Image (cartoon, rainbow over the protein chains, first blue to last red):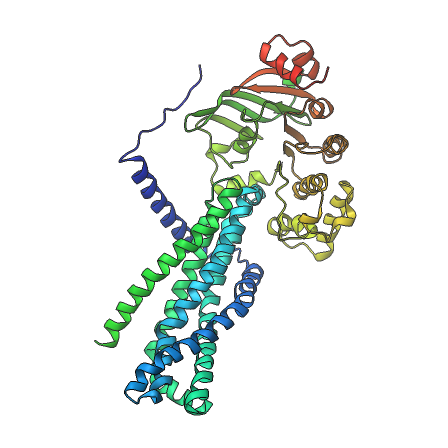
Length: 265
Length: 252
């Protein structure tokens, strides 16, 4: 006689069960990352390759966006400051806005669209075409080779990209300030560095590390757990972008509250 | 006579369900050393699930799988990986790594599992296997540049690089033209002769089964309905479902 297990009934409702199961799976995934990242084999070559993919290939988009943000934000802020005759404060205002919020946030949002979706789609398609299974049956840990490398690369490269975006945005702002207020480059940057504190730079770096980790791990999680079929690959890429963007905003809010609490303590 | 030979795989009372879809229902199967066993069945009959359970890609609900006398269910990941190195798995869609060249695809399992190999030894092994599958000129090509048949061959070469004792072929001729099918069938036989492997070939293609198999096992609705040589299973078939499977393949 066949021995067949009965299908379990939902504990709460089917949808709620699925939500909590998903949440528990996501936590287990993150936990597995922190458990495995410390132990060999270390895939240095793959981490470097991913750093190149994430960092170098994002440069054109980041450069253009950063420069435009600098110009637009400066042009939009000028009329308000001009009312008080305070256009000389533009470099200070822009530097605080860019370093504290715009740089990390804009870079992370662009990266979640470009990098997160590409990680989700790549790992999702590897899942669909059984490439991940092929690694497992060859006694290779696919989690180490795919997830840890990409998450580490995103965690390393997003802070670098954020610093680059900050610089490019400030150059965009300088272009506008120089054209309108005839301020020299050295004067502009003296004002920029006077306005920015160590806490601003430190919090910006911490924020971008958190954003980078989020983009990497969410992209990998969605790809790794994509359902079978080509539709699943598209869904994984899409879900990676949506979920990482949502988490980035939540993290921005939380980190901002913590930093402000420290700043005004 | 077969029962006197060494069993390399022994499956008993295997049960596997996906939700309410009961795929394998109390399945028993033996694979003997040096033989090619063909598992036949319609699409969705659980053939691929059977071999995925063997390498631990899936976990059975009930029953035992013993490979070289080792119960796979009792192994931790490290022990399972050690066992996996003795088993080659050729995937239906070849599962070549898209971002790597043919050379890198073949090197990948080798350099991660065999330590202290020199560049010369790695190159020798890769070139030897590409010669064995008659594709030496593809070494620097990307998988996207290969035909379906070439991908299958490279996939087989990649599994052979770790010198497995058991080969598992998942639908080796699916989606290929008749000429390439015959080439792949011949390759399966050559692999057995050259590398002294025991194999399980999963297929629904009776031509492939006849050309490669010493024994056939027909999986219908989660049970093996018939096990034996091709003649015993099909030409002397009494079971209606086995007979109809044979008739639908237009082999007569």
